[in-house]
Length: 330
Length: 296
Image (tube, rainbow over all chains, first blue to last red; front, side, top):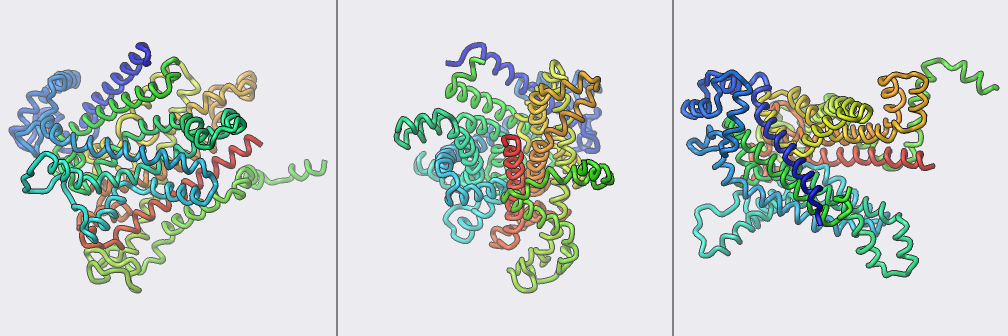
């Protein structure tokens, strides 16, 4: 059980970090010198950039013609509470929020299933390697893991793309669903979605798995030096019981933390993979926002992604407490 | 008696050299360290001497576009008919430079914050660590992307941005080290003999965590090289600079994947992977050796 006091502390912590991200998002465009667009927009006076209608509306809603920074901050918070992150320059007349709401599910789908699959495959692999520590399979797979975890995510994606979408055309090169197709049923649609998601998700799984596996391996090797493992061997317990119930079970906790810490990286990786596969999530949108200098959209994406990761971290914390009740007692 | 006279006659230079080299000797027994160091040295040499061995100027059109590897072009040519091998070799220097400077700058920030928080404790520690926690949770990549979009697209901006965002983990490691080290007897002795805060921090505590700091600097180098490649791939930073990241950016922009031009795509990615593996081995070698020394 999670104690109320612990839950409250974690919630406060999450709120503080979320507030920090919100504040950072406000100050970023204002403190960085040298960008004429931002200077024009946020320096007061409303400029000649972007769509003049949009600029006028942004200036009005966010109090940009008032040079008082505190007032601007107040307007920003008020609009944020009302769910207003401004209007996109590029997708005008759509608001930033409506653009993000359409794209966010795709990113969550990629990042979420990538993380879960990688953990489900990586943890057993780590157990296998730790149990055979020092053997040929262990040193080979561990070195390969170190190599892969240093390679940028998107590069793995490019290689998969060449192999499976260009050389042998098994999987589609781009997009989340087939273009200009009407589906006979919901299942046909879902099938098409999964078919398009195979390469992007495989990219994430290949990139993430070594990290989880190596972490699991190293922690389990440490655990296997503990006295209770020796006792278990001395008692004559079967190997698989020692491996799974004694060693792996106690080693899995730090890996859970690792999953939490890695979430930020996963999202970053998912953003790049989306760009590579022209997948219609936030990463692809972020890229087109950069290309078209759509600053309100960029900021909105940054804020929403940050809030999602902060929330996901909170969830991982809670899961951790359920696995290891000792945490909430401290 | 004899030994003492010998050591007294040593010149200060050789004394300093000995102090610096002696701790490194046990490392030569670690196979991982040697292998890792060789890989890293290979890339450093390539970065430093690359200009002398490239067959063509990387920007010169030296062959037909999209030609696969041949005797003339070891790694083929790109969409403009430029020599990919020359791009790769010249690009090594920039990628290494970014990794090195980011590790240097961000660890300076991380070490200062960690030392201050751990040594002063109380409110300073609370405030600094809250801030560090926030930076650790907020996803770095979107933040990097936004900052790069605002700043002028130069390599200096990229180094600056990566340095400003990479230090939090280092400060956490340093802080936890300080918390254990400051309880040691020799710190108490220094304090009793009247040493000030700064002197205790830098003369007693800092030298004792040198290996851990160095290991984390190595991880910062890898992280920075990967992050720079990612930003470049997104078209951020200076896309006209020649480095491993911009190689992949142009390959993507010009649809090298669709052309099956693997000779343009494989080298930069594999190089990042192999260099990362080498740096990892270096770090592991140091970690294992220093751990053995403490135990034994």
